[in-house]
Length: 377
Image: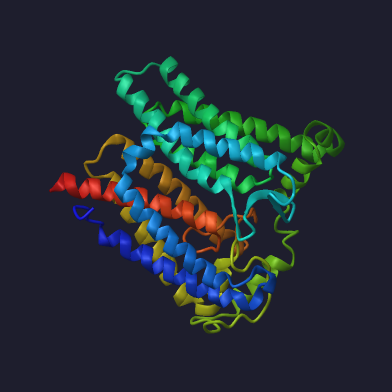
């Protein structure tokens, strides 16, 4: 692989993000239960494995993923199905959600995290094949594409929603929409789609508001409480958000200092990791971190503007859509600006499956970057 040249403007921010992640998780250990174990050391191990996976993907190449994507899709769908019927001990339930498999008692694996990567590749391939076969596509041709994409995301969405994990389902749809947006199909489809979503959601919310008994009879109590939580997230924010905001708000320009967390709040090493970072390093540290994210995102976008093949452009669109949504949602919810829906902060939050899925994406980005460099040379 000596002929591979990884773009340093992508690799260096990724290394900086990994350092920030490890430092912040080390600091978070002081306010998380001891039952989680030494998550700081585990995160280092996951990063080592993750960079190895990314490097390995550079040897395999993205074409291998393209060719075998439906086989990989089938494997992850099977895992999502099995997760719903697996007995306790094989499946792991946390806070009412059964999203993980226990792996030989040494860790867990979350199939939905890998499904995000699978969908980026699968939908990109569908769109690429569609554009290769239809130079002058008709409305009927585009409708067939939309049905294929819809079915592709519908199956894992239903299975993931049943776990339940609403946050990841939203990410599935964000991925699909961003890829379709750059696919070249007529924009009238987006107007139609959002109109249908608006009408359906409006009807559901009206029933939820005016007749709660009817809503529960139609959709069940699980969906009722999930919608109730989204609608009244500010009033029902609870101790987690209030304490996180207090910790951030009192940090000032430079923060309380490394490994200084003045108040406890749950999920400090996962969903609320940004609260720890902002509390430790203050406004200036937060600005530096957000600036680094923006720089990393812009470098990914810049690859799409270079002369690379179309399927890579679709992949970049899906990756960018997923990352920017998760970044905004994860930071926004710990600041009290968005509902708390259990979204991790990419490359920062603790989690083996989550981090490995992002490092697979990093490997894909490295391959696209290398492809662009070879094209220029």
